[in-house]
Length: 66
Image 1 (cartoon, one colour):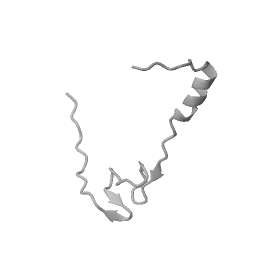
Image 2 (image 1 turned 90 degrees about the vertical axis):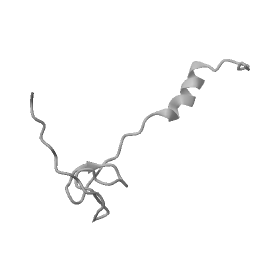
Image 3 (image 1 turned 120 degrees about the vertical axis):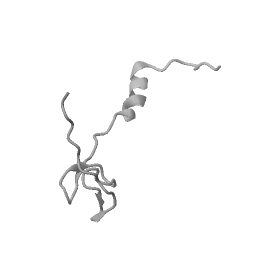
Image 4 (image 1 turned 30 degrees about the vertical axis):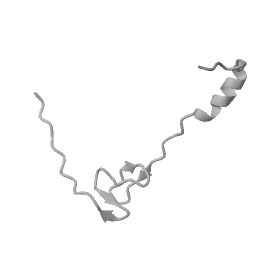
């Protein structure tokens, strides 16, 4: 395996890493139910996308405590 010819300085390494930062997740509101959803995705709560119902969502089942 090859080895780098020269070691990168601390500032050079950090400058190269400056573009790897995570970006904040942008959320939109579903126009039908108002829940926060990712853009260009089907709403997981009501099953609508672009004003149309595309998924059949089962009603939530209440969990019983043991």
